[in-house]
Amino acid sequence: MTMAWRSDSNGTQNARLADVVAEVLSNRGDAGLIDLNINQKQKVQSAGAYESPFKTYGAFAMSVTPKDGQSFDDAKKLLLDQLDLVKKGQFPDWMLKAIVNDKKVQRMKTWETADGLATNLYSTYINGISWEQELDDINQYEKITKADVVKFANEFFKDNYVVVYKEKGVNDKLVRVQNPGITPIKLNRDAQSPFLKDILASKVSESKPEFIDYKTAIQTSQIKDKKISFVKNKYNDVAQISYIFPFGTDNDKELSIAVTLFEYLGTDKYTPEQLKGEFYKLGITYSFRTSNDQIFITLSGLESNMKKGVELMNHWLTNVKADKDIYSKTVKTILESRDAAKKDKTRIMNALTNYAKYGKNSRMADVVSKERLESIDVAELTKKIKALNQSPYEVLLYGQDQSGLEKAVKPYIATASLQPAKAKEYQEPAAEGKVYFTNYDMVQMEMSKVAKGNEVNVSNFGKANVFNEYFGRGLSSIVFQEIRESKSLAYSAYVSYANATEKGHANYITNYIGTQANKLPLAVNAMSDLMASLPQIPAQFENSRGSALKQIASNRINRTNIFFSQMALKKLGVDYDIRKDVYSEIQGLTLPQLTSFYDTEVKPVKYNTAIIGKKENLNMESINKMGTFQEVSLEEIFGY
Picture 1 (cartoon, rainbow, N blue to C red):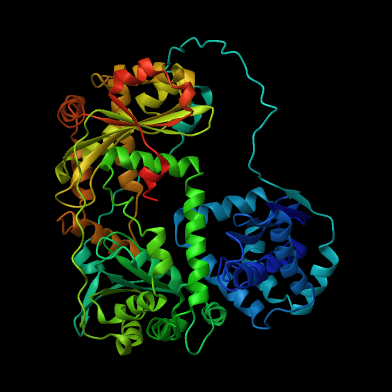
Picture 2: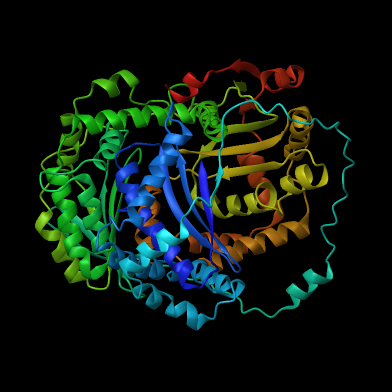
């Protein structure tokens, strides 16, 4: 459910006041009234507030996703209750200063990237705001007082809002349209409109590739048994500290539950809500991420406050307090999230494709059971969190003052006294030509064919890059143009060659078609015809090769990405910037060489197929030609 009020235009003080109210309610999930009183207490699935100012007016919105069995009226009341607290001035006095500090940090982060700065520039132009006004914007926020916010909230928020409900049910007003038939369009790949000619005639300075020397870009040191890597921030006052643990859910699948729970818990000194407030006051954001082989704990924000942020995070990790009631709510939230996943078309398709790729014994389906979730002693989970400081890990420091950041983390680093459990191994079986189907009530059908390729080989990265550009992905690819643009057989179609991210593992080839049920057989045949042999279109190949080179030439790996790109390369057994080799490979690549790559790496593979849609719309004659048909349930593909 979303409810919205019409607000003032961009650049006005009323728009800023509406934005401040939105931040008081929900400042990116950190310490707003909705964040703490609703989300932190797990009273709904999710909720938030935001202000969207436009050129002539804006929109202030609050949205909520209720829990199962929770009425819209109940969820709506929870939101309006928080708005009433703003009207009464019942929010912390420090909140406005913290909001302004957060805006300064977010602006710095936005301007760190060319994309962020460009977006900021064209947005001010579209909204009729001068750059001088944009630069002065935060100064105007600093003038806003708590009294201003309370006055605005009482005057602006009346019963003058609209509400949009998204409900479950059957649409009995559908109008079916007779298929008129489609005449294939002859593609004019060489034609150029006057508009395109004008763009191509524009003089643009050509970007030159810049490659990283990791040995000079990353300074390393040692504190006890922990490797410390430092990357200098040359741009602003934002710092980041990441603790990276070399183990994850493959070592202990309950780690993800422990990390999820941790964010809802407090300590012997702070309640969960107070902890969020303390971080927000410091201008420090935190994040936790668990993957199959790593755990990341990250602090980001003003470098001047990073020492206090590290101290607060260490206190939280070592003094986290078990709470049975909070864990019970967390289990309920996890189970509701699982139930929601089994109703979400995108997540069902992802799970089904994973099943076609790895089979029933996949990493994705190997989850903590409902019975185990409900029987775990919460103390077991907090013990896993407290054990992190005694485990192996390395630290990434990003900022201006290497010595200062090292001093901030040093007091809390202990020599590892614990070792993670051995990682569980998951097989990567070869495809057997099976067709896996999961029933879902939808008009369209989606199909993914997945195949295990050869073991990853970094010397083929350039060819894989150009193959995807030329044949498989993007608006200019042969697959997209032929199947969607020319024949109108699908609303989406692609072929992807994905390199493995770790040495010793296999690459995977995927081809995807999303279309109307009655067009699926035609689209499958069209895809098969295209993939029988690599189409030979020299001009398009040269465009794709040039595009791949330009992408590398214009791409800049900087800031913390320097460290994380090196970490990714290490998994492949590479200790230098591989893009230099890839760029050189693409420069000399010919269409016959790409064809040879296709004939060796793509053409011989055998596929398993994943299809989602309404069973009664399946053309079984066409399906049986693809392979052995097997219907699989939601429980089988999700593991719960």
